[in-house]
Image (tube, rainbow, N blue to C red; front, side, top):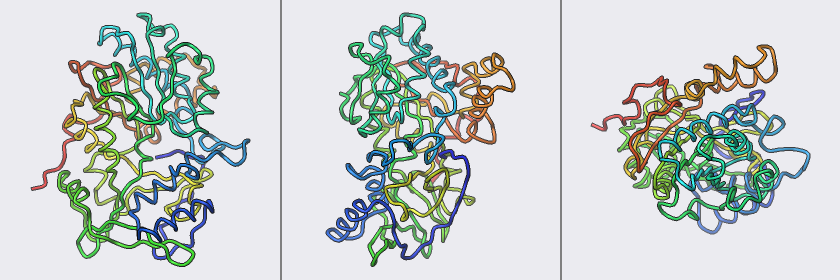
Length: 408
């Protein structure tokens, strides 16, 4: 989940909701529904987050003294807490570089780089890396938001100017097939992809669509598309009556695109989520969808539209299986705590003053009851033998945990 300093959780109101949010965005959504009819919730979420002018992640922050992501923003991420994650990723990249025979260039692609803090920490940690890695390294950030790019430029200023060293692309599709030898990674990207929402009515899963009613939005149910039905069937997912959940079809499309651009190397997906068996278990009968605004949470998607973050937990089982079908073999699956410990986090903590602010900040990323176990790390490889990675030395899960349940 996104992280916040305090929590305020509300239940979904259902029925007609008086909508609030960015006025122009609300008008755009209402106009699209008026022209084409009710839209899938996934389309509503896409517009709320990524509308090219008014979307939450695209539109500049109105108050330049405020931030969208960070301690004073709507939520914070691991890279806002401490550089230790970027340092660990850099150490893992150095091990991968050796496995690949020190290619030139060694390309790192980060998609959804936020404020650029993780990239900054990664590049800082690689400055004195063995094998002349810093000279061979090419770092590509995939970011379509002009406002986020501006923040990334600020944090990465020391590395900008060296030919080809740090570059930006708008879309994953801008990378040619088989063009990356090295590392592709993302941190809290997939959870922000637009999701389809389902409700089980009279024993039958239905897709939730969004319609307009007077001054608000209302939800209606429609039969599942073939793609959504196949998702449930292929995963052996059975949902009881009254159940509500989310399906992230975009994640499946995305991992297939990632597989296409990878020639040799690793794909690392860091996010909060579960195996399919856990994600669609009885204890999550209301799904995992949440909105974040000013360090509080809500389940109401129809207030503060375009002014709050929206997110849902990741189905790592389907992500692993879709990647394997596209040529990404499963290297391993662990949690953030185990990943960081395998890459020397304990030794790093021992070097800090036990009561210092830095010590507690680093420890925050490792706490089992918090970010340490909530965040998972999925590692996939292609074009190489399965590598032995320090980040996967400690495996809290059984090897078959990402297997889908039988549909029989």
